[in-house]
Length: 258
Image (tube, rainbow, N blue to C red):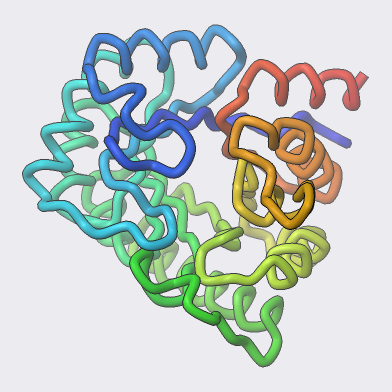
């Protein structure tokens, strides 16, 4: 592993995220957790105000902004902050509050990033969160995801975005087999020349992998799989991993690097 990848710590200020929904809806508690993630080694804290779990329904832009902006503003002096959103107005408000990266599950906000001269992550998603896990189908998941991300990244670069990342969108409109195929293809995605972000943390395909008697492993019992897949992605060329468990991931990456 040439250089340890960046670790992006997840901070969901939502009532309904699949893993930590409701834990950090209070601003002070969210800020405390974000600062803890930074102390544990997160280079970026990713603040999200709308759940993108399978089956999630959208929230209004003003409600989403009200959730994220105070947290972004409080954290921006302590750590680099990204905003996890698919809404231009929320992205712009978060950037005004101090965010310097837009983590965009819709891969559609490159113009906002260009206008504000901030970084941008283009993620692949088939469909939208409410329906994305309803029998997703691809002819060739790796080829289709790579082509999509290359096109979006090149478009953003032409628009003037100087920091562009690509994310294959593990769990976003993919079966478990699609997810494993994309993880195996991280070297191919990294060879595209665009830095790759990978987020496997606590996701359902890991729960399925560790199922007992047909019951998926609970979210809190997916740590080992989350850390292992993050380390493997890093070894295969991912430049950033997005995780809930920052301390464990940082320790594992440092051990491998050593």
